[in-house]
Amino acid sequence: MAENTKPIALEDRGETGEKLFSPSAGRNKDVIAETLGERLARSSRILEIGSGTGEHAEAVCLKRPDLRWTPSDPDARSRASIAARSQEIDNLAPPLALDLLDQGWMGAAPECDALVCINVIHISPLDVTRALAGFAASRLPGDGCVILYGPFLEGALSAPSNLTFRDDLQRRDPQWGVRELDDVKAVFAGKGWRLDERITMPANNLTLVFKPD
Ligand SMILES: C[S@@+](CC[C@H](N)C(=O)[O-])C[C@H]1O[C@@H](n2cnc3c(N)ncnc32)[C@H](O)[C@@H]1O
Image (cartoon, rainbow, N blue to C red; front, side, top):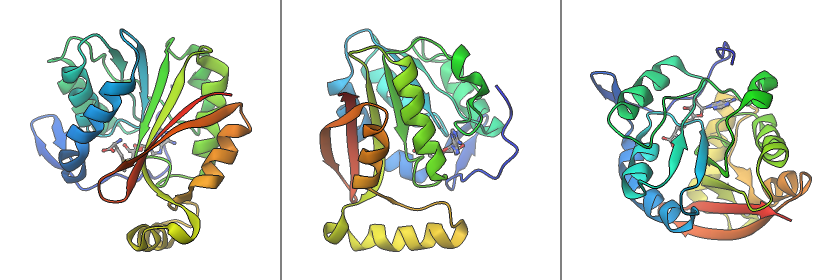
């Protein structure tokens, strides 16, 4: 599991000891935990990609102690934050150093029933979305699911704030950008996944649940 040497986008963060705190995670972690908590199967094994500070993993694990959650992030400082949370929560495993642009680890990834990826695919190249869909197709069971959370564009119905955010991201890196939902659906469809549920979330975000076609 290689250490990422490429620049990674990290949100603004505060810190207390090893634990990092993201203002945006502070705002959305409860509604995300509620949404995921209602959908993840009992006692399922979750692999989270791009866990950041670990606040979402912590919130879902506290709400659903039956889940077994493995967080991950390519960024070492983020992993230290997640590790500090993992020491306090029985069903939150220590973080793995997984980078979707480095597929060497994929064959050795832990068995899981669902993949969760929050606020990652707009702030990384489209190859990250492709790798996520490919990994899901190769490793999840027939009743598995992939859950994405974040901002998306929906053609003429796109929220103006998400269009502005796309432009900001693309100025920072031309490969980043809030994705069109249809493009994300096409990437997943190419690997045998259909969009099963589209959930409207606060602040013009969506939770998307993909299931095998
Ligand atoms: C905006 S932060 C979101 C963190 C957290 N999920 C949240 O919502 O607070 C984006 C995260 O994606 C991770 N990331 C970026 N590129 C990645 C890649 N190629 N593979 C896996 N994670 C990646 C970063 O390290 C960072 O933690």
